[in-house]
Length: 209
Image (cartoon, rainbow, N blue to C red; front, side, top):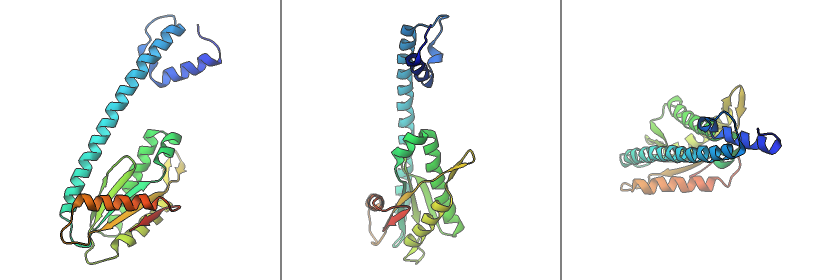
């Protein structure tokens, strides 16, 4: 039998990693439990690596498609990189599943804002914490700044709601304007990403062009 506070912590950790799937004996001993934890932890890590690999592959595929869209862009079109602030902090506090939902929520708001304002554009998830958007300017030279302001207000107005309580977040937005007839899509994307990183130095939802 296992008793005592220290063993309770072991049991909590064990079931967190699905140790129940590895226990087949009638009587539970500490040695058996530790061995089962090791096996369960190993499987958990392997599954996490597999999951991370699949997610990374999806983001790489999305970015590749997005760069092809940028190739077709025209002068004065804009690329935006929108990234949730303190991704690791959200991950630590709420866990990966809820943090992923928050990031998906950000992408959804971005897409809806484009539709609501009758703009022409495309939105993708470009990373765990990031969303990217390509907007057609249609001769509106300030479309990037206007849309960034719209997004900042929208993200403040619509926190992520889970189980009847809201989770507030802030984002940083980087904007890159295509200002040359001949351009490299990857360079444009990187410029938007760098601007996004600079925007992190500001408080609340913010953007840099």
